[in-house]
Image (cartoon, rainbow, N blue to C red; front, side, top):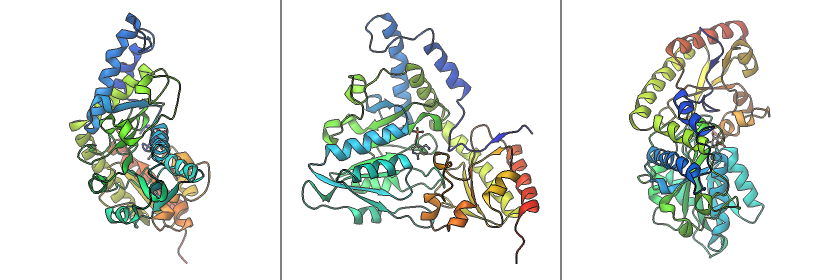
Length: 392
Ligand code: PMP
């Protein structure tokens, strides 16, 4: 067995070799600026258009509805600030959920500091919100006040516990209301089937490095490119790229990489990989359950197939980390792991601080094998034998 073993695919994924191969010609040979009218500019145009189409196909959209960004953080910022500020003449109330990623929660805090009111819906013990909760939180009061809702933003799937929110139900409920529905799809797009039209999603954030594409590239889907209807303004000013919604020269090699990555996790590729990941996860869970006192965090069935988040009751995560040296898993979200605070996601589903700090997230991905899973189970068994607290 070759170490280290990577089981942290929610933090990031390796770039697929086929993605690298697609990108390489766009570094030295086809290096033109897509905005240039001469032949160097023209020869990169098709690459960008194909990538736009591939990203659109992944989520049931069309190419003109895709705006390239630097990643899901930027897409989330563009969507939230753009919609909130652009619609403040209508209302200043925004709805989201306590388990969102920091790129949503911190943007909402920023907006609160500028006079917006934010309702963060609580989740149940599986990490889910219901359509009824969203419905009850909607305010339809006076124009331009915090008594009127203009935006609902929910994550498609949670990056820590893998729980999938009822996006289609919420989208269907909101579709005839004058409220923009944004979904942070960083963990959902390319991981579970996602159809923006069927789900009635207005804006969707996508990240390249979560789907075996390069870092530093992502996308924002904009329904029907209805920028005026949604009063969506740009985050970055400075050029007319991406229809004026995202200024800056397109990083063609990254765009092409994102397109190829999207293609490789579309349709049947996604379904086959999900079956495989589901089997691996069940093997990992059933194996660990036999050798350690654990409980699972997140929804039992509505969850990302590659996600296993466990609280270890008889061993704290530091000792687990020592025992599982050579296996890369996460004891908290990678984005906040420098702070030793318990995860806000785990505490919001009812974990105590101690339980949250004794939890581990295994994120299975494309390169993981059954042999690796069996090896991890064996190492967990050894670690428990060595370090587990003795009852009483
Ligand atoms: N949203 C979620 C749910 C995420 O998991 C992440 C990445 N951890 C982001 C947003 C930010 O994505 P990016 O790294 O592409 O900015």
